[in-house]
Image 1: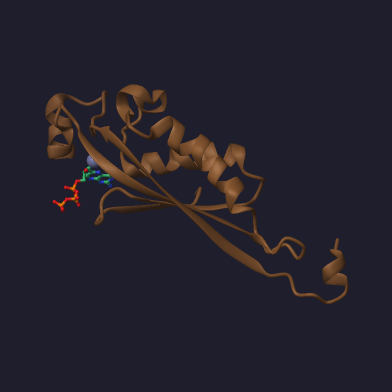
Image 2 (image 1 turned 30 degrees about the vertical axis):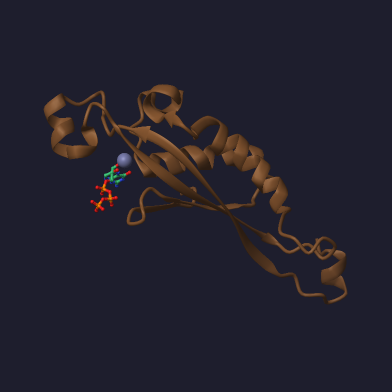
Length: 148
Ligand SMILES: Nc1nc2c(c(=O)[nH]1)N=C([C@H](O)[C@H](O)COP(=O)(O)OP(=O)(O)OP(=O)(O)O)CN2
Ligand SMILES: [Zn+2]
């Protein structure tokens, strides 16, 4: 069904808005179902038993219609609250493998971190808005996940 604005010929426009947050965490790349030798071979220095840390930067992008009344896809203040709940509270200053139950049996790669964040945000955001999670693990290592 056409909205009132479509009926009177006002063009519907779609926008993408992004909120960026940073958090610090430590981890170790290790798969419990593999031997120590296999883990060492696959993950190399990142399998060091004492772990290592990152200052992760997360970019959360939502996509949706720009509302004619508010001028917004969604209020960035609301997005900030959702990211606080889905990302900052569970992950900031945490040992991912030991303090985040999800990673007990899931290797804490940045790909899996992006899936974790996607799944948590999907439960909080209004339906159909979440578009992309981009994580900068380092300045050189960047992962994108779009829910596929
Ligand atoms: N596909 C993936 N590969 C790797 C991941 C990952 O999450 N997904 N993670 C790591 C390590 O966690 C590691 O911290 C990255 O190390 P490194 O490549 O050494 O990081 P830098 O780019 O900062 O190092 P430079 O020495 O400056 O190149 C490994 N692989
Ligand atoms: Zn790492």
